[in-house]
Length: 478
Image 1 (cartoon, rainbow, N blue to C red):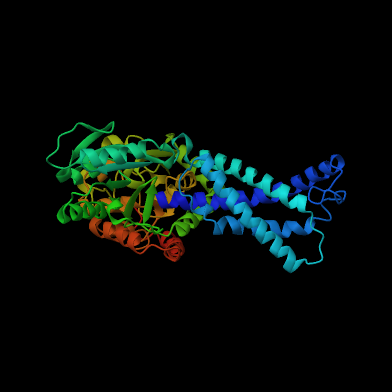
Image 2: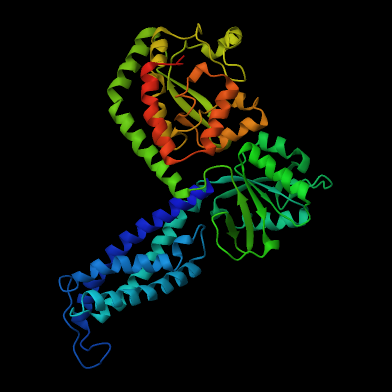
């Protein structure tokens, strides 16, 4: 999810820059008009009075400043800033991009409008204004994206005392990177209680248990004394449960830029992830989630109102049932559904345990006595799932993805099943269109892993199209 946040930030910067570049131009022309009333001599020749400037005779430049500045900033690499950087460094990079943009703008005028009268003072004043405007806008965007602890990812550091403390110190000194170190794992022969101010959660041999107990999003392995077996053990453990694995790569002296390489000041790590790596596609998936969920809530509002009324008339109990579920990497969130069971259903779990038909830690029963009359109907039609569009809108779920499990179920997962938590849970997935409750638990888990391994926007689109007939046929619904 670090890559998704980086892609979101890059595209946000592009849109923000577009707005700033367009907004600053008329403001600059207005300022230049006021300057013309005060300045009596041309700044460049010291002889001729400044030419008359207004938005009308400089309007043709509005078609050129956007591609010139956005193009210059792209070629200057300002959109490759994945993390928050110092304000002085940011201003220097934007100034360099501004110089390139002025050159591109003047070249465009010469080629496209050779007879046009261009105010040199407008161009120069605009370059200064837009550089500082972009600088302030970027600072605000960085604070919004990385400030106040938003969008943090839980980090586990693996390494010896000396090497690990160095990485922990770098990460801790830069909280705006959106990474929160929750602990460290040390080699089996070491016994520190803390590393760089963070607790030691276990030894290297106990890494699988540490990943099982904590909601880890990424593992950083640092140091140069690891043998091949130890490296392979950590990489395989992370791969098995779907956690991103990052390895200290300083010994390689890498200098190339790659999507799998992340740099924190002068500290470079290689990242290996089993989750989808196309950040732009993941961003588009999130946009589809937001738009689709919003439309679904609006269109289905009358039906949802009717369902709520029927539930209330049936037994007078609460309309909604909210339950803690495991989200991305097992992070808990409240999932909402229309209540389809009796109010005391949770207290009666033990008495119906023998009716379970799926095997594994999940519970599904065709003749569950806790289901109400209205509940049986809304389950058959999947209307009980409609409130989950709100979970999609808030970002806890996606339209398509593995179903969010109950934390008590996750505690009973086998290690290979943990990897299904490495992607945002969804309302529908391969399991839902392949028989739902008619499929045993192990097959369900394998289908979810197949979705993660084969994910694409086209697969999501295909599953959404297949979900409608699956819902209408009520096949496997319980």
